[in-house]
Image 1 (cartoon, rainbow, N blue to C red):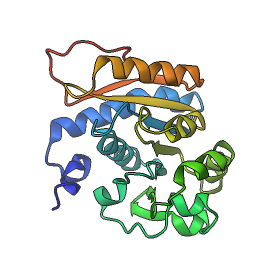
Image 2 (image 1 turned 90 degrees about the horizontal axis):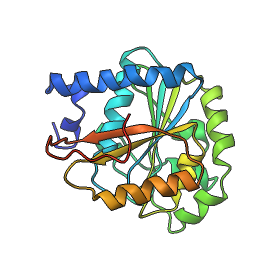
Image 3 (image 1 turned 180 degrees about the vertical axis):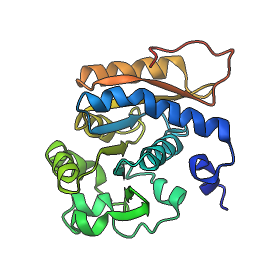
Image 4 (image 1 turned 90 degrees about the vertical axis):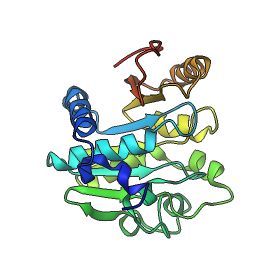
Amino acid sequence: MSRLRSKLVTLSGGNAALSERYRSLRAQLEQVEKAGARLLAVVTPAANNGSVEMIANLAVTYAQAGRRTLIIDGDLGNPVLHKLFGLPNAAGFSQVLEGRCSIGDAIQDDVLHHLSVLTAGHRSDHYGDIVGAFPLRERLEQWQQQFEYDMVWVNTPPVLDSADAIQLAGACDRALFVLRSGAVKEDEAVRTRRLLEAAGVSVIGAVLTHHQPRRRWLPFKF
């Protein structure tokens, strides 16, 4: 098993306690789902905060619970999701945005039972421009309804590194804020929260990854 693949603890069973935490988080998020939210983004201030492995494991728990789930890798500048699942990345979200591939051809169905993945695809030199020009909200809603997904998760690039993150999160119903304990600085988290609030992004709460008990600050909590 590759180092990246091993981070899918909800599949490998290598860390039962951590797997249970992901299932517990899914249970907490059920209230959001009951309220009608079907498009959820994961946002983080900076790279390497554990957001990709979190969204992947969380989506797996949704699929394991029988919910049809799609994960979209919206981090076009630094795609990792396909590596976690061991998937090809020849055609993906980038090609759909550019109109060079249909959504039906780009989505990789049944990665697991009830789980589909739209990888980032080959990096475009103008990926920042194509995200801003695309009718994100309209298309995300259309794909969710067309393919009858119970939940669509969108992985975004780091908010402080890319304007795409705000645009992607703003196109979703809600956003989940991911912070890595001991890695992200408090001022970065606060700046990120303010940017999200200014853009009207509805943040439902925060998840602290790699938690160290001595680190007690959080701008807000789930």
